[in-house]
Image (cartoon, rainbow, N blue to C red; front, side, top):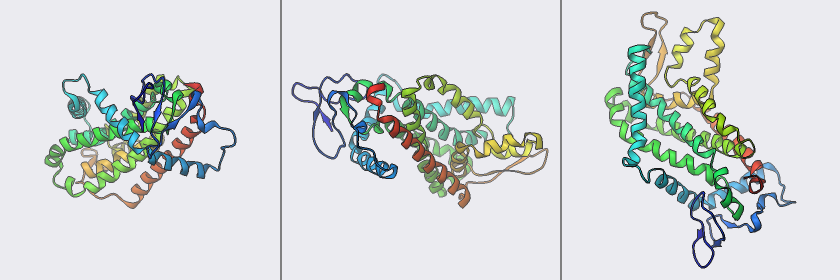
Length: 334
């Protein structure tokens, strides 16, 4: 890992100005990078894609200590001058739940039981995805000076935001679990493996999305301006505020494509999987007066687990390959 000492200054976290580098050879996966040259762009270093990815994964594993340090720094910096500190990771979903509960139970009613529990079980998933990508998209551009001076696996920068948000998600679940148990019963505890499986697959999926955003934003800076629009549209195309069964039941043949589009949305699978363990299932009844019927927390089907797992692996591979391709020229473009 990078260390301070002597005349050169060492690694002091993302965004710091580095004039020199002191390097301790070890398992941290960090090496010197003279004159701002990215070693991944050295001529003659081309290999088969699979071999390169496996090599980079090994390198990333060796840099796990650096990744842990960046995660700790991200958590400390975010709440450094905040009076409530980590409580914001719980207060944000609680406040959003209160607002949407008033709107969608009193003004525009969504016909589900325990709407606050229904909403928060999906919103925690969405908040993790959005906040991870929002931090990751600036991770390479915002650390240009560091990237030019020192070589380390660039992936740790966007991944540090993913894992810091993962800690927020787990803390929020820990605090909100008594309410979910009170509202939905002890099935929430019994089906905890379902929730943990959803979080694990979601983390893999989000890591791929975060690396894609971080890598592409280096050459297409307009992406960070479009981020808000992209995720706003994606939010309403994901069944966080409403159950997927309601869309399927109320859309006629003319607009059936909308229900199909929402169903193939990858975020839908992770929201539905997490909600199955935290809230339960929601199905259509065919009755006009009572269009939906909710069930207790349950185990996921093999199909839904396989589809969510497929999306997670596919997005991670695509995002990682795009990131590695762009990483060759990070030192020149940031």
